[in-house]
Length: 309
Image (cartoon, rainbow, N blue to C red; front, side, top):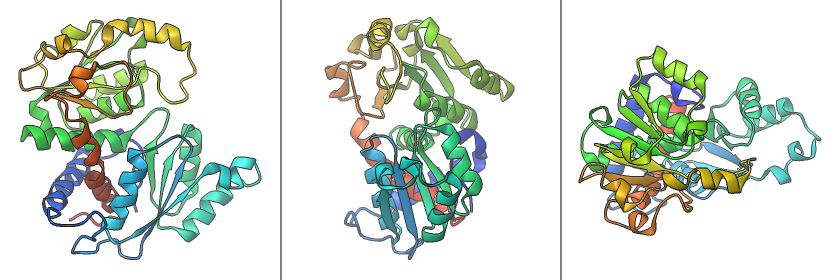
């Protein structure tokens, strides 16, 4: 049994094995229906319990389809349906109950502390479907998408992030160390990644550069990432923050600074941080990116059950 909480906690060898398995499984499903099981039925009889404390579309859909394609089942819980949300049951008791009924637990949460407590007391794998500081399943799927499109190892590419230093960027930074790729970050001065994470990058010989100009950050890049400026439950002065990011919108002018065959990615949902012509243009691969969540989620589940080949 293994947890999947943060990319930094997982050895590079294991992360690469997840990507390799996802590639194999996707290639074998060309003639399969959405809910047809993989031929090896690797998680037959297993139940994934999901709980979402924040809104979810792609993560909810992809994990449900992922476990079904592995021949398991899924049950989705809402916090307002549980005693936990009403303060009537402890996290410890909740962890023990869910561990007794299910075989894996995926949580999208607004609390790092809650995630860590559940991880401590659960006797089944815990998967982080998004937390305030991390979005590991999203970013590992993004690595898969980049390698699928570029047909080469991400270690040979230059990646660029333009936007806020949020949970997605945190996981992308961790991935840049684990997969050894160059990462340029374009953001305003007061919105740079936290020092603890940057110190970890430095200690592990990461290849990160920070720019306070979006076009400078984009120069020579193979991939341009962005995300919403105002994240879910972002407790900030929204008008001020949007104003501060006005010069960090991904436009066609920014894309022209990257390589001619550069692609654009966005974990969605989108906002004003990207122009329509970029989002809907030929370089945009956002819908392929979203669909690929299914294949990587499958291999993450197999990793947690220690069933990767």
